[in-house]
Length: 492
Image (cartoon, rainbow, N blue to C red):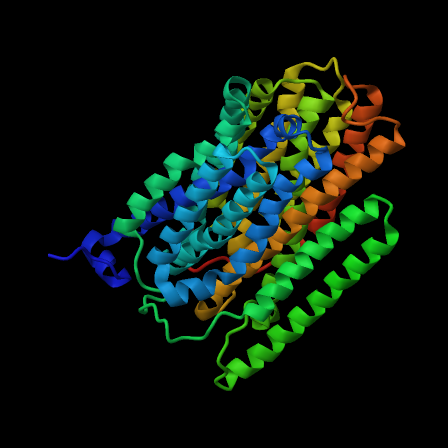
């Protein structure tokens, strides 16, 4: 007897519990991807010393991953349609596994950076899949609970990752953090062979005869993202001419990308060969357009703070990597608990209220860094990090669901990729922006991270960088209030 493989066969074989088994299978892969994106931050100072590279160059270990992940997630709908869920998912897990092994064994910084880019490509393809699965196989009134359970599992990676990573960096050095994704990748490969269907979204068979991948748009998106981030770096370095050229190139690439998406969208309606990477019909839905704006701004604050916080704790407050892990562990656990509660609330409470409340708490946590000094007790630092993670818990389950609930079913895969693209593009921008603003404020206060010991001037520079993130959260609240919409059918 052959093992069930298509969506209908798996649903018939496992019954009502199948949707939860499928969610668990994609959750394990997402944990591996999220862990690879966040765990590196606690090792950046140690890696910078090992390879004798400056903070600006070492930062590309984090931002290079973000750029690769941002661009590759645009390909997820096409990959799922051509190869199906199982082959796409398994291929990304093998690539993520290879990146972890190569990065861990490498003795060259360029090879480490290349391994991080490979991991980012894999993580980008995986990121939209859970949202697509939840919107496809769960009833509307169950989607918030499913997103909350998925979120609770997936946030355990950033909750436990920095803690374990900090201890491993102290004991074994930075290489050990690359190997942490290996067991998760192996487990996800085993589970995907049993529970992830071979079919494409909608339950139809994957087909190699469909539309081809829109490579010109992918090149434009990659070029625009890289030029934008490099332009920010050059602008901070005082190279105004080069910065202006790079930013102008990024703007031109964005204009050509949008123009091509509109043209392909119209051609597709007339039976054109290639489907757009980002269907502009998505933005005809007001909630999705506002949700994308929130996702971009929120991504800047989220990933910018994920990069900035470990650096602040180690080089600003002079804590060891293991102490950093200890401080971040309670906040990660608070996030996991909050996100489970918020997932249930997402089925019952308006999206704009939950997202706005989360953004307000996140902004407050950034502002509270002003009260922390070199002699502050650790509980104070733990307190403001926990407050921020509680805020994140209210945002994560609600934002994607609130933005995509008004979309037609055939646009859900594109919608999941597009809103994740917006968040990750904001994240890549936030990581670079935090590094730039921090260096700028350090220079203004007459300090540098290479100097031995911290100082009041250094803490002031960090505080001003966190205040910038707080302002971004408050700005995102303006768009979040536009996410008003009806509650899902069947909500209690």
